[in-house]
Image (tube, rainbow, N blue to C red; front, side, top):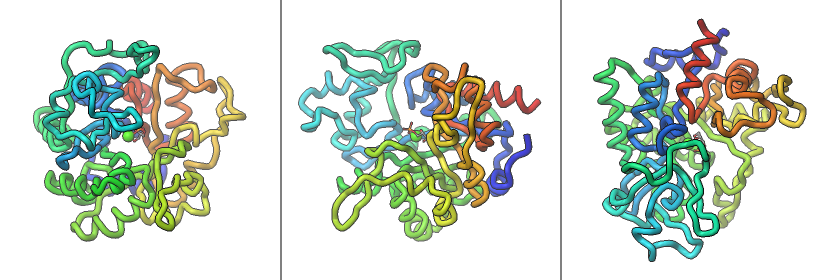
Length: 350
Ligand code: G3P
Ligand code: CA
C-alpha cells in the first residue's frame, strides 16, 4: 500500500530509515510479555524489530523523570507494602511524593488491582505478578540504553516520549514538559530529523511546548497530540479553575488546520477511526478521521492494539492491525504485541 502524502512528508523530515512501511511503536515496551516500561520489556521489543520504543514520563519529588505509565506507583509496584503511610487521601501513591532513590528501592511488576484484599492481574495471560526482579529507571537511563543498543545492533530505533499529565505536574509546581525537553536536548534530540517524537494528551500544554518552550530552547521536535474519550485524562485552566478538557475539539475536522500548527501527527484511541456502532466482525466501517488528518498534513498513530483485549468488531488481532493500518490507513500503531505488529506489516508489504 502506498504511504499517504502526510506520511511521506513526515518521514521525509526524518533521517530514519523505516524498517516497515507502517510504523510499529512498542507500547510501554513489549508489555504483553514482560512488565511494562522495564528495560527488559524495552530490550525484547527492540529485538522484535520495532521502529519506536515508547516512554511515558512522570516526575519525582526530587525532579527526576522516571519512565512509568501512571503518575501513581501502586498499580505496578510494591509501594503500598514498602511505604504504607505514604498514600494520599485518595489512597493512591503518587510518583511526585517519592524521591528517585525511594522509587528505585521498589520492585515493579505486571499491572494489578486489589480486589477483596487480593492482587488481581489486569491481563490474566501476562507475566506473573511479583515474579523475578524488575526496577524502573529514569528517562536518561532509557535513552542511554536505546542509544547503546542502536550502536551495538547497527540500527536507529526511535524514542516516543509522552509527558504524563502535564496539568497535574503544573498543579504540583513542576514543569514536566520543560524537564523532558531538557533531557532530549542533552541527548541530541533537537530537530524534526531526530528519531524522536514528543506526544501528549494535554493540548494546552502542547501549544505551550510548541510556541514557547521549543523556540526558547532552540529545538523543534516532531509532536503528536494524543486523543482519548476519557474525561479525566486532561484538564485545562479556565478562568482560574481546572476543568476537564473536551476531546471533541480534537476530532472536529474544522479544528484540524489549527491543531496542525502544533502537531505533526495525531494519536487517537483506535476506536475513533471507525463507526463502531455500524462495525461488526468482518464488516469494519471506517470514518473520515485519518483522511481529515492527512488532508491537514498530519500523520496518525492510533493506540493500543492488544491481542488479549480486542474490540467486539474484529475476530482476531490481525483483523485489527488490518483495520487500523490498511482499511483506515493509519501511518503506524502502538501495540503491546510488537512482534505481531511487525509480522503483520511484513506479511502485507512483501
Ligand atoms: O501514547 C499512546 C498511548 O500509550 C496512549 O495511552 O494511556 O497507554 O499512555 P496510554
Ligand atoms: Ca503512552
